[in-house]
Length: 488
Image 1 (cartoon, rainbow, N blue to C red):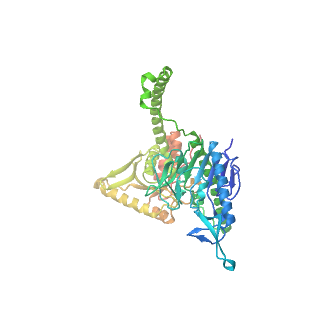
Image 2 (tube, rainbow, N blue to C red; image 1 turned 60 degrees about the horizontal axis):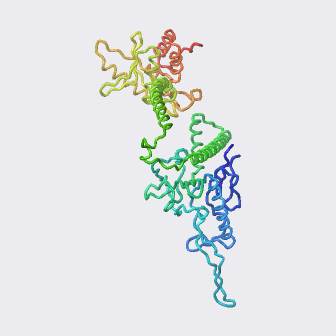
């Protein structure tokens, strides 16, 4: 059965499994499996009247607010008694001045004056238990205290989009989220002895910020495919927003359901005292089960070692895929693996103040020096080519006079590395292509290198490997075109 979530006070999301109720309504929580409650007093204040710095409600609004707070208090209490999870978003809804129903009169006749008697009213009285007092102070820095427990998954998803609008003074539950300084509770859990349910207090998330973050992520992935047509771009942006809103709504609902599941599974069992573990209190069946547990733990330890070895082997096997999306050292290591599959003797060289990404020797003795470069969202520029040219000259200077010979330069480029290979633009800038031609430095797209290395890893083929080596050596300052991978 699908969980039905009832939001009260603020409409967070819309979905078939979600019911949104106004705070200023007489709605029921009977159909809800999970309650998400936010105090919202905006519908009661229509004028500009204040008293002692607080908004002051007229007689009618005062009566309605009191009645609705009493109504929600009864509904929440019933939900908690039924064992339901109630999530309270602690927002900045203020204390108000409300009419008491009493009036004072002064003067006589035409000079008679009527004074309404008002009192301070905190709408958080709708929470049907003593949880502490809400202090309206806002901030962004929230400190996690110890193990978040049942809040872990939710906070991982929406913690970065949550800022506190108020804190709870003298919180009666287990405070798990605090202000950065002062240690004031802004989130935690509270169980009461009179109910089976759980109250979870949290700072309200800014789902609109989560949506904007999703939109930026979608745009970033498509950044290399600009559309010059304003109409098409507008439609694309609209599509991004729709997808982001749907994604965040689904993510939020899933997090709320997971939070409820964790709350229901949490127990308040008393840990067994140390003395209860003495042999004189141990049951025979318990001893037999402990023995089986010991055997199982031994087998699990052995399986854990095997799993560790498999994971290491898997990571080693997957290193070649770094040719598709990595930069820096991981990309350099993947290039060396690929070159060895092609039959090169390839190593990274580090000596004193010199470092070459790849020094390659062909079986015929041909010596090559390579440099690697990965770019997030742009083509490989001439800068890396200049560095490779300096490395070639340095390598030449290091050789003995009688055997000195310039090595062949190879620039390995992984441009637009976070974009799928088939969607990438040109890997090398026009300036880089011209300079490579002039300097006789060959250019390799690492995605192309992956294709041939993957084939050779699966199906060692010396004839095909030799063709790949020749393609790198004989490119004559152009982008290397590898031979077509044989059909399997």
